[in-house]
Image 1 (cartoon, helix red, strand yellow):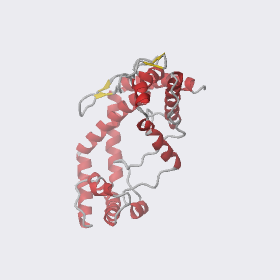
Image 2 (cartoon, one colour):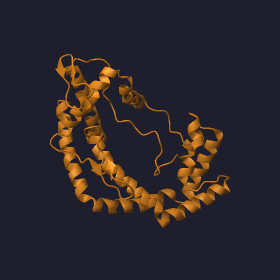
Image 3 (cartoon, rainbow, N blue to C red):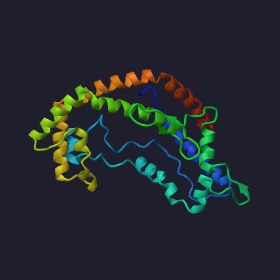
Image 4 (cartoon, one colour):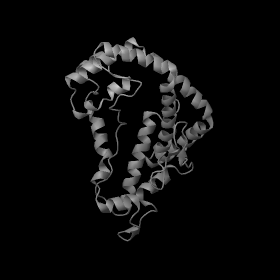
Length: 271
């Protein structure tokens, strides 16, 4: 899947271009308050996925919690909340509820849709993406689609389908039984690793409790004994390869579209 996901620099270019174009649209209309922050780096995830888990030392110190966010992650998190600080006027300019402002015509659908159309010009993304394990996903956000939502919808569904097939596979289920038995020997009753790491009690505190730390430590050791990562990687990689082959035409189109969207983004960034 790594061959299909945008590089970090490409992610950043698309995010920066979107922010710059939104701010320009608002400024052209005469609205200058609460500009959208320009991201400086792509935020890292703060949650463990099913393919990763804490190291022995991390589990002993933090349980299932990840280390503190970096300065960049904090800045990006604050930037993601900028629209929550928007007043009614700014929101109406963004979503197109207002058709004119200060004597100027607001773009159809507002600045958000105007920017999305500009970034996807020359390569219109699909409005829905099919799934093997559920209903089609509606990619459209409002009246238009962002380049990243188009990419993430297709690749995310491929990963979702591969994960669903992986969990249904007998090799995965056998491994999970070994893991569950190991956990019971340590005094913990969970059916799957996801049940342990996703225990709702852990979300009640920003700091790991003694029980969370003890669970995470046992979980990490039992995953090692059950060869959790080895089994998951082998099984999931096989399903991903099969799905990628089945959806080769969609992926080829997406990669071609991404090149166009990046050219549009670089033009907005003056590159």
